[in-house]
Amino acid sequence: MTSVTSLFAPVEADLSLLTTNLKKLVGTRHPILYAAAEHLFGVQGKRIRPAIVLLLSRATMLDQDITPRHRRLAEITEMIHTASLVHDDVIDESEVRRGMPTVHSRFGSNRIAVLAGDFLFAQASWYLANLDCLEVVKLLSKVIMNLAEGEIQQGLSQFDFNLSLDAYLEKSYYKTASLMANSAKAVGVLSGVSPKLAEDMYHYGRHVGLAFQIVDDILDFVGSTDSLGKPVGSDFRDGNLTAPVLFALEEQPYLEELIEREFHKPGDLEEAITLVKEGQGIERARALAAEHTDAAVKYLADLPESTSRQALINLTEYVLKRLH
Ligand code: GRG
Image (tube, rainbow, N blue to C red; front, top):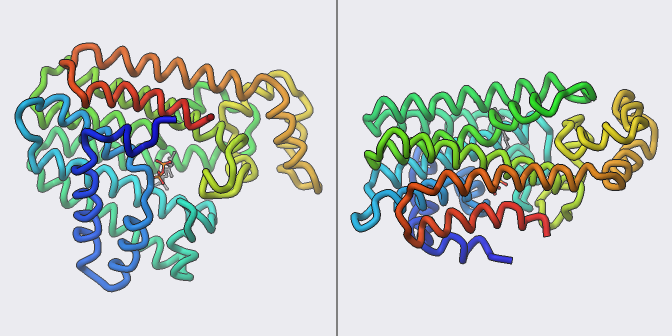
């Protein structure tokens, strides 16, 4: 499988500068934030969001270098993503993320984790405003609203076996795709591309984001604790009914009963996971993710050929290959 490192080769140097900068930007204000920043940005996530921003920046700037504003946008994108993870882990009471203790479990306090998350959101907003580009401010502040909306929708739909596929996809847009879509479009704005190309970049990010979330939801069933960095089945246990479950519900009526009683009886969760894995749910979800990666590639048609554009195409394959 293509490793993330070789996939992001055209922006490898940009990504290591980004990690150094993130630690500096976040960590200088307070010892606790410094520790949290070391903890958050030292253990690397996949950095897929800043990689998309940087690859699109290079693909649109071509022979000119990317600007400090492109770099700052990539940093803001990763800050917003990380803030949402810190808050999400408090809400879900998750102990492990990226194979490491979550902020609230590492620092033994939800208060610290909530404040660290708040601080990251606030700091991202400050750096965003300082880009001095109202259109980009509008795009990225909408993302923060969407993240909150996605989390609320998820909270309200736990164990709701009547959730429609459309409602699931809308929630996935809010939780995951909005950040990729709007930061991709923001690159277009900063690079001064045509409105049509900026819109295409938005749709590239949107489709990659939806595919990424669907694959993430499949991995909740077929991944290993090691590769996920969190226990298998943890989203399902919390009542998050995702694409594989929604498809499985169409062919396994007993699944509804297990979900309705919120896996209260011993063995319920294991039985429900087996039912999801037995049928066509996972394969249908994989096919849905592939539809979105195919759609994403089409939206790159108007970008001039470059190694960065090719990496953006390869990235869609990587999103699906995480399943193998
Ligand atoms: C705006 C106040 C306010 C709150 C935010 C908590 C929340 C509301 C939103 C959370 C949304 C969320 C956690 C989405 C998860 C999306 C997702 C697939 C995360 C995993 O991304 P990866 O695999 O993670 O890219 P790494 O660790 O690689 O960075």
